[in-house]
Image (cartoon, rainbow, N blue to C red; front, side):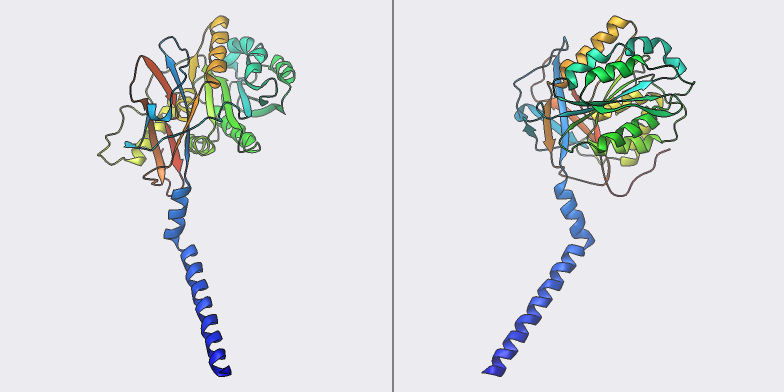
Length: 333
């Protein structure tokens, strides 16, 4: 009986070891890692809907929206907690010599930023750039400090390293809580000059971080970012899509980043128009819907997103235009 019990215990031990090895193999399998990773992807899509006069529309539900990911319709959810989440904002100011006229208006923009982060809603940092990037004011909840820093902004050299400034600002935002709404307010010209950072690097970083970019620029380009929606029955050439985005970034970095992230792109001339643009951002920022979905086809690489209403009226829909899934990365020149 003792020998029998000993054999039984040995058998049980071997069986346990075998099961443990099988489990370890399964967890280490590349296919299993990809499956777990793909199931964990949740794409956040902050979305603003306005009428023909630019007024935000309310009382919409998830069922009112459709979302296409590379042409494939997704199952949409809506989160009502977006408006109450703290805001972490970086205001990025063009100090290059080409921005001389704009700086006079920007120096008085402190009071216009207050509705977004004031009264305990969040914190803001200030970054300036010409050919180099400078931290003008670290994160603070005191908007008076930001107003004072803005008044001290001076013209620099002839550079316009917008991409370097956006990447630097994104890294600042990485220090903030993951639950914060991350925002970059870019006030600049439209074309980059002198950045060491590539368009590809900035695009991937913005898409991966769920950062929204609002751009107020003093010149405009009207090219569309993605063109016509993809056919739901056709395959999507991810390299072509990403190449088009990079090309659009070269032509107008301010507009492309705003479109891609779900923010807004606004151009201005007079001081009154500038104030109106900032007021629009303040109003729209707190009237967004937070849509989300788990991709049905989470292929690695660039994805395009189209968001619309199932029963459209005379409205405008602003939402992020794409996102990036980690994996094999196509390079675009």
